[in-house]
Image 1 (cartoon, rainbow, N blue to C red):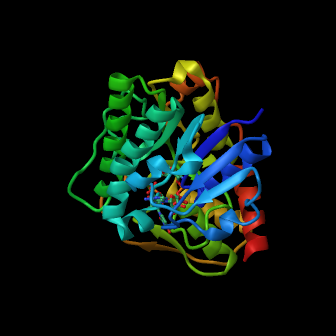
Image 2: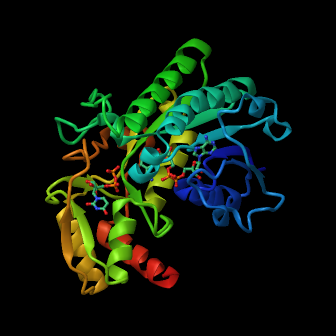
Length: 316
Ligand code: NAD
Ligand code: UDP
């Protein structure tokens, strides 16, 4: 017997991938999205008896009495712009969805006695002063800058989760997701792998911001989704924050070179100004994920990039 599962942000990159897997596993999925940064084509072919789409802002208080949201078993709360390009285009909406929207989804979980996974971010660590970053690291975050609408609102979203667990015993789990990729990222998403692959395949300059010495650790989408599903499943993860990411760290310049090489592109690598507050390092400590979820990523950057580039080639 399938479960009744809510996915907020179902038209987005991770939400659409997760929705597909949950439907294929025989669950009934209620997707909620206002298409702020998601694409309606991500929802095509999902209108079956296993999928219902609600085109609404998750901050709306009317959602709580929506007839399709009775008797929900699980809530994956993914709605929020995630690319710096998107959250800086919609800074106030980003704050609202991660604070008011998160509170609304926690209320839904409380009302339905449902489990809820909130997708926070490695950005909660800001520009970290230690590496790798364990969940106990409190971060080095700036309230006064263009990234604050995202990282500080995710941090406040986590506070709501903490409180609903402490005050009302809601079965909440928080994932701090590190940079995830696949060809599911739209070409115009703005995040680095979609930019570099699109640029390399179309012969445009590959645009490295800053000198490219900043690092990121990239996780392939199937690994991240698997981690989120285990987080939902495992009792021991209730009331916990857990990193979900791949610990293989790479500089952005090396990433550009790798993508240029794999695509056999004649594109030039060029340098543009580093955005304000761009973190210098990022690498997850996965001890807690291994211990509580028995999870670690399995797809290497080389394998993931190969699959991503092949699929982008078909799209372009
Ligand atoms: P995305 O932008 O592709 O998808 C987000 C979806 O949320 C979009 O479909 C958008 O329309 C929807 N949305 C935004 N505001 C909404 C609102 N008020 N009401 C209803 N729907 C709304 O982003 P993504 O990469 O799929 O990320 C999903 C979640 O995972 C986000 O919460 C993000 O912060 C988190 N996350 C992602 C990554 C990553 O690398 N992809 C890393 C860290 C955290
Ligand atoms: N970046 C880049 N060129 C691009 C897009 C991003 O050099 O076209 C850099 C960006 O400055 C950051 C890293 O790549 O250092 C990852 O950026 P992204 O927007 O993917 O995610 P972030 O980790 O910053 O949220």
